[in-house]
Image (cartoon, rainbow, N blue to C red; front, side, top):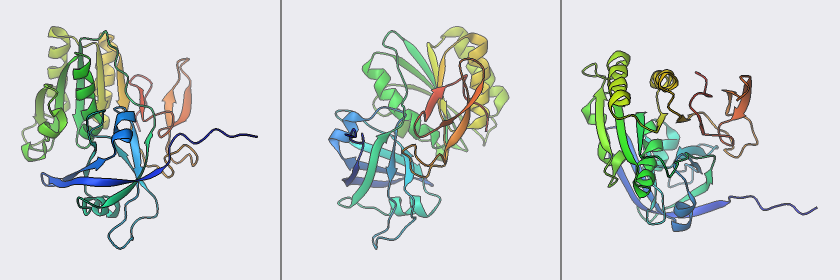
Length: 270
C-alpha cells in the first residue's frame, strides 16, 4: 500500500536574529523563506530546545508563529521561563534550530471584511501578531486591545509591526485591564465601530468576556487555544480539549491538529 508523504518534516533552520525583548521575552528570526511563505497566522512550529552542548528537554516545544509571509523571516516571540525557552533564548545568529512545521489550523480572514478587533494578553500577543500583517494585505483595518502587567511588559511595536494597526493598551498596574473597564471599552468599540470579526488568545478571563460580548452582538470570532503538547502532530492525544460541536454536543479535539484555532463560541473554559 502506498502511503502519502507526511506534510511536514524536520528542518535545521539558520538563526539570523536572537534578541531580548523587554524584561521577560525573547525573539528569534530564522532564514527559512519557504517555511515562512507556507505558514499562516495561528499555526505553530515544534522546536527542539537544546543548548550548545546538545542538552535540553527531551520533548520539543510548540511555539506559535509571530512573523511569517512571503517577504518575512520566520519569527517567534516567547516568554523565557523554563529550560526549553532558556535554551532557545541562548541561540545566537549563525546557529541552527531544528524545526517541524508549520502545524495546525490557522486563523481565517474573509476578504469582504473591513474591520477586525483583536484582544490579546501576554504571549498571546505573539500568536495574534501575524493577523495584523495579513489583515493589512487585504485592506482590513485592525483595532487591537493589548493587556499587560505594566507598560514595561507591553510589546506594541512587536505586535503591530508595520501594519498600521491601532493599539489600545490596558494594564494591571492601573486597573485598566480589569474585566469591568475592558468590557466598557469593548462595548464602546462595538457600538461605534462594529468589527466584522473578533480574535483572541492568551487569557481565559478575557476569552470568556469576548465570547459573551460577541454572542450578544452577533459578531463571529476565533480563538487560538494554548495547550501542552507532546508530539505536536496529532498522534499522542496529549493536547485534547473539550469543544462544543455545531449540534451542541461536547467533543474532545486535539489542539495541535483540529486547532489551535477554533470558533470562539465553540471553545470551552479550561
